[in-house]
Length: 139
Image (tube, rainbow, N blue to C red; front, side, top):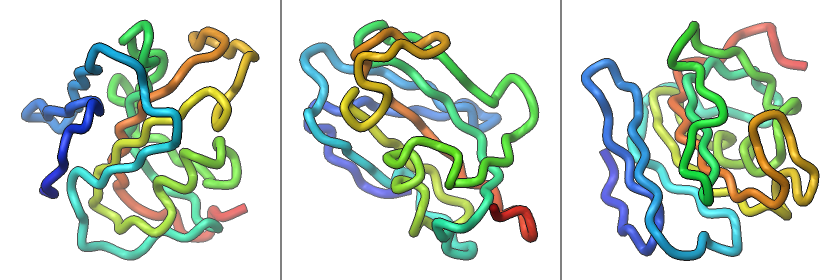
């Protein structure tokens, strides 16, 4: 576990099965991408070319509701080249076994274009558990 100062950022607690619970504070979200390592793993370092196996939960800041999670199914295998750059940057350079939180403002995500379950202009919050690197799956 890593020490993190709140600074008006979401707080994360973990259920016994590892599922994150996220509390988003009142007030305005940060205007820039913010990444925090919550747990530092001791596995291999993730590179931009990797396909990672992750469990994640995504919420919108304003609605404080989950719009996507893998915790209700199997972990996802995600090529970092197939996600928004801020999500990829939060995972790249981390080690397998780590848990990271990233807050992504609209201009670094989908801007004014609504996406499935994500209103236009949304700041998104992801908690990402990096479970492994899928060898040979990089794209």
